[in-house]
Image (cartoon, rainbow, N blue to C red; front, side, top):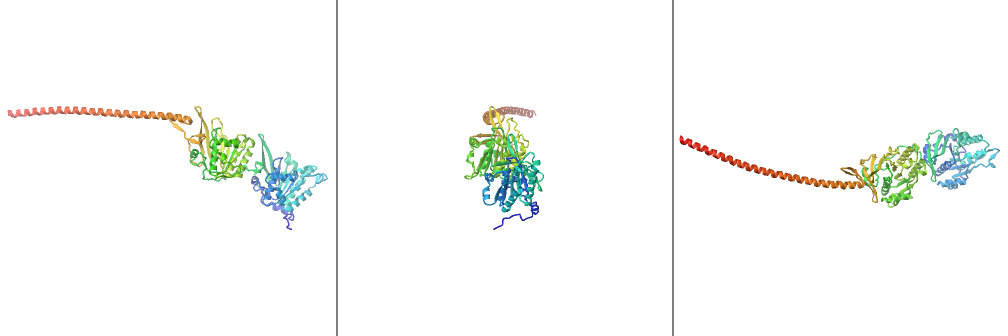
Length: 579
C-alpha cells in the first residue's frame, strides 16, 4: 500500500524554519492575492477576523477549494457550523466540496464543543483536538488547513486567560507542522485584550468589517499585518454574493493600458465626421455629458448597435432604466436593441452580443457598484462597456472619495483594453458644468445641450476634446426622430445661426431676400445698360453735330480762302498791267 505523504517525520523546528523561505500560497481570490503580494504566508497561521456576515467562512472555503482544484489536499476544522451545512455553503458558491470529500482530497472535522465529551474538569483538553487534526493532515498529506470559528471554544473554558494560552499553543503547533493555515474568529470591540492574537501571535492578520452609509452596507477588507513581507495597507471593499468573493484592489491600479489605432464607429455618420471621420479609438473612454432629454442614452445605444453590427460584444450597465424600458424607448428611434440582446453572450448571424444589466443606483453602495462592473467586465470580456449614467453613482455619494473611486473604475476598465462609453447628467441651470471632475482620464468628451428659442427646444452637440483625433470645433444640431439620429449643420444666415424650424423660416426669408436682391440687381444692371446706351447715343449725336459744324466751318474757311486767293490774283494781275 502506498504511504501517503506526511511531514510527521520532519523535525518541527526544521519544518517551521523551512516554511519561512517558501513562496506565499495563493488563496484563489485574485484581489486578495494581489494585496498580499502572492497570497498567505506558507506554512504559517493567518488570522481572519470579522463580525457575523462579513464573509470569513466563504473566504476560508474559497482558500481550501481553490487549493484542492489546483491538486492539493486540505482539512477543514469547524468549531461552529455542522459539516453538512458547510458542504451546502461550498456548493452554493460553485465548489464541488462533496466530490472532493468523496475523492479523499478534503476532510471536515467537527470540533464543535460538547461539554459532556471533550471537557476535562473546567477546561477543554486541546491535546486530543490537535491529535485529530494532525492525524487528518498526515492521512491526506494536506498542505492547507482551516480552523473555522475557533472563538466557538470560548464556552468550554473557565476564563479567557486559559483560552489565550491554549490558542497560543495552537499557533505554535501550526508553525511546527509547517502547514498553511487560515484561522477565522469573530470580531469584538475589545478583541486585542480579549484574545491577545492580533499583535503577538498570528503571522498575518486580515480584518473584515461591514460599513453602513446612507442605509447601504459595504463589506471592507484590510490586511492589518503580515510578517516578513510587504502588503497593501488600505481598506478594500469586496463583494460577497452567489458568485463568491470578488475583491478588486481599486487603490492599486496602475497606468498600464494598451493603445490601439483601430477606430469604433458611433453609429452616427455625422458624429463620426466630427471625430475625424471614423469615431473614437478602441480602448478609449468617451463621456457623453448633457442635460435631461438631450439624447445621451440614445447616442450610447447607437454606439452599442454599431459595435454589435461590427461583431463586437457589448456590456450595457443601466443605472436608471429597466431592460424593457431601454429596448422600448430606443425602438422608437429605430434602434432595435432586442436584435442583439443575448443572455448567454452568444452570437447570431455574425452579430455581436449585447448583454444588458440594469441595476438601480440606489440599491447598492458606490464601491459595490464599481466592483460589480469590474467583475462583469472580467467575466464577459466585452469589447465595449456602457455606463448609463455614471453620474447616477457619484450623485448619491457625498463622500469626497467618490471622484477617486470613479477614476479608478475607469482606469481598471481601460487596463482591460475595453472601450468605455459613459453618460453624465448635467444640471438644468444652463451652466453645463460637469460635477464628476473626471475629464483628466476622458479621451473623448462630447457635450449635448438644449437650445430654446421662439417656443421650440433644439438639441445641440459639440466635441469638447478628443485625444489624437482631428475634431470639428463647430456646434451642430442633433436630431432624434423615427428616422434615427442625425447630426445637422446649423443654418448660418445674415441674421446669425439658427436651428430647428427657425432654420426653415430664416432660410425661406433669406431665400426671398436673395430673390428680391437678384431682381434689384438685374434691374440696376438694365438701367446701367440703358444709361450707357443713352450716353453712347448722345455721344454719337454730339459727334455728328460736331462733324456737321466742322464741315460747315471747313467750307466757310475754304470759301474765304478762295475769295482771298481770287482777290490776290486780281491784284497781282492789275499790278502787272500798270507796269
